[in-house]
Amino acid sequence: MKGSPPAGRVSTNAIMKYIAEIDVMPQKEILDPQGKAVKLGLHNLHIDSVGDVRIGKHIRLEVEAETEDKAKEIVDTACRRLLANLIMEEFTFTLQAQQS
Amino acid sequence: MKFGVVVFPGSNCDDDAVHALRDQLKQEVVKLWHKDHDLQGCDFIILPGGFSYGDYLRTGAVARFSPIMDEVIKHAERGGYLMGICNGFQILAEARLVPGVLLRNTSQKYVCKNIYLRPESKSALITSELEDRAYKIPIAHGDGRYFADADTLKRLEDNDQIIFRYCDENGSVVESANPNGSLNNIAGVASERKNVFGLMPHPERAADPMLGNTDGKLILEQLLNAVLV
Image (tube, rainbow over the protein chains, first blue to last red):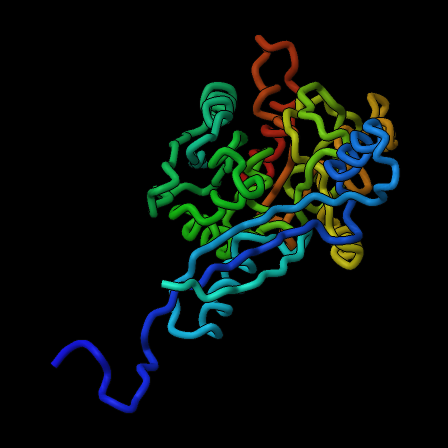
């Protein structure tokens, strides 16, 4: 009697795997000396049309959750509690269900 | 007074702190492993300098969730004394036990040299009885640029929570004496209740007469005398 759900009903508690692509960036008002140094380097290469450069982090997570909303909640909590420090950084992320 | 020096993976100033407190200040000191849950009855906890967890993600960000930190945070909430030096300050900031954050030095360089500090707070135990002069203390960090938003900064000033500022050898707080781009030359801050102290400079590295500089010992002795009262 195990396995597929009863006919005509879609299982609501299947665990899905999601991929979160997270960007953590220094807040706009905070000086980013790394970005400034890289901008200088680009100008030294005569890539002069580059204006402001800001450097952050890209983090990729695999998340298992029942729904996309739950996965979002997990990623948001991970960002707020550890991955970003909201005193100095801000974060954005996208979420994609992974094909199994 | 019983001191506890927490050892995280990557701590490297734990022995300096133990030496300063045990051999110079003649205090009882134990090391506390970061995976423990027991503060062993210590009255004063030190988070030492180093590169806990390789400074991965952000300095202090991972150490902040080490098992012993639950007990350290409870200790601070009970009003217990807690001091973070250098990486320890970064851990305190990540744990929100002191306000603000430590960003990458404006110069993008790791700075290791003697600097001068001026004691600021008249109400924090760590500075209240220090002389109004410049103290020579070493720094050694790549991420020491103190930052807090304008509201927080005003609260810090109004509540007398800024404990040290970088100054020149005459005690003048000037931009040229700022080694890392810290806001308003801030080198150390206290918590609102002033039982938690965070500072980037290393008083424990200037506590042994054999090393030719004992200004750090003066700061630690003053702190010890103040908390024993």
